Length: 191
Length: 153
Image (cartoon, helix red, strand yellow):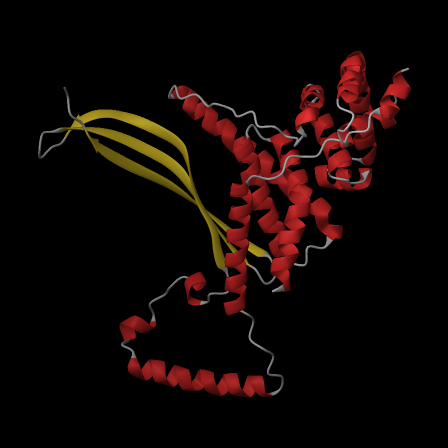
């Protein structure tokens, strides 16, 4: 019965990150849930001990399944457009902010959504997935130089988008001194 | 605002927790796996005695089957997957690739109108052996002709 314990603990730890990554590749929250479910179950069957060394393979499985689903969705959308049935895409939040940090989260989400998908993928896997550049390269099937280049471009783009909003972010932080986000270093950097 | 600031800002936001539906679905699926694995473990290794035992058992079974069953049933084949439950069905998906409307036709016998639709689809069946993760996927192309009753108002 230790396997039951292992997978639940493992799922609690990994699933928020997996769902966040899947949301970058799918058009709706329900699709992301389906992708994460299939990937996690498949991964657990392959590695029932939940070994953390194999976590990059889990992200790779999420990516493969999401891209398969997208191809299938594209065909389905074409069919449904022909039959004049339109799809309504969902817009679920991808972060879980505290009430006082919702505006900050919205600004960051907006900035992230403007990145090209391949850059957003790398940023998500690096910052929230905690993967190394080498692991990301393996999961995405690209070279490590490409990964580091995309990450660099993504940070530059985010810097350009977020710097004009620094006042909003700092005011938000000052207005709510008890929030868990520590942006003091940001204020120092901007001053 | 340097790279470290951007990284800190982004990392300070926590990814949303998974939905309850997702947690329940994964829970349900893996519990099924575990219950299945518990009932379908590989037979223990019986070392040197095993070949002798299986040979004698096989011979005895063959004699019994040949003597008891009619000839017509001996050669009746059934799918290997159903005979040896070493794999578990995990999904059956039917994806409709194309739907052709063949219009309204009148039944030869009843003379009533009916709508004819031809559906081209692909069925995908997947099995998995939870003991080693081996997967089997079978794709079956299907073409169905569907007849729907029509009433004019």
